[in-house]
Amino acid sequence: MANLLQKVIQYYHHVNYELMDPRSVDVFYVRSPLPWMVLVGVYIYGVTALGPKLMRNRKAFKVEGIIRIYNITQIIVNVYMFKLALNVVTNKEFNWKCMPLRFDTGEYSMEILHGCYWFFWLKVYDLMDTVFFILRKKNSQVTFLHVYHHALMVFASWMSLKYLPGGNPILLGFVNVFVHAVMYTYYLLTSIDPKYKKLIWWKKHLTQLQMAQFMLIAIHSSQILFRKYCGYPKFFAFVLVLQNLFIFSLFCNFYWKTYCMKKKS
Image: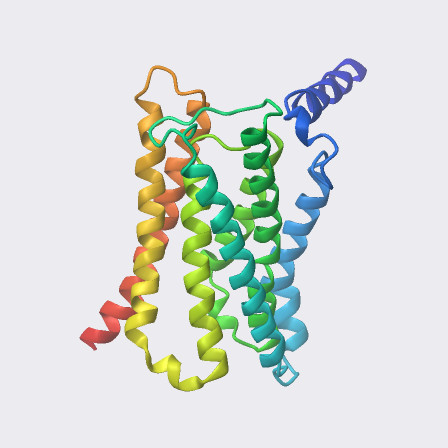
């Protein structure tokens, strides 16, 4: 039993410390997975069970002003992140077809690591979306797709920052922050004036844009599987393909129920 415990500890140390990118050792709250396991666990329990229970006999909070500030900060940060990502993908060192991981401390590699760092914290900040739904008693919007996607992005961006900063998934961050900048612009407009909610065509195309994002990432990641060597682990590329196809299928289901079925009825 003692030997088994020792092996488990050694394996944990190997995976958690020896395999991580040495440049991320001193990055705030990156070394240990515990804070993010707790955060995601609390998030899932809070928005699916505890939050709705606490709000059951309460009136919905009026948080429109806070939401506007939240949307504005999301737009600013996502535009800033898009600018960072644009600098990375337009650099002559960037390879659109096969971008290997870089672990050196050169200026370009550190710029990529810097982008991964801010992208991770942005995904943590995104969790507030669901909190606002709960406070406003919009429980119908706290779907499996919504919760799964938000929780997954926190863990995926943390693992990327810790073990695999950059590489081919840079395109994921580049496209994601662009889509989110457009998305939160729409949310800001609807929070300022309810008449913008009638722009159903914009909301519909926004969903289409999100679906296109997941399919693009799946296709782009799949090419790694067929290359002899790309400098990015094929296993993680395979996971990226599966996850993006899965989320794409969830969005397709949402799109069909929201726009196609309602149109028929």
